[in-house]
Image (cartoon, rainbow, N blue to C red; front, side, top):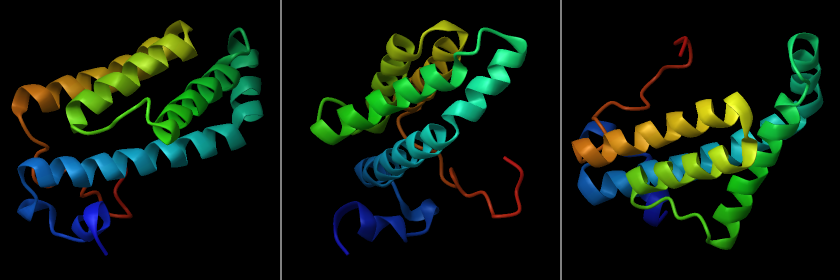
Length: 136
């Protein structure tokens, strides 16, 4: 194993600085791809749920935004490193492509997370350490 994968198995408390950016950037990239795939699979279901109480576009819009994130990751227009800046950029993309309240909610969440990492200078030790039975 080399690069990000080599660091992925390291205990989080031993990951610092630029190495933490590599590890967590790799995790973020994988999360974006997984979330995009799962949202795409549930697009109709999410849209049907929204249609019962709203305008019926949630699944369609969220799927469009996540497909845009993955496309930009894959062609290099979205760069996740450094992690804080990558989260901010991902948030701006969601805000611009998802639209409505969902775009603002998901996009701002990613942007605020990115700004917190930039402000605090690192990913806290133990971040992402939820166990399988934890309800997060």
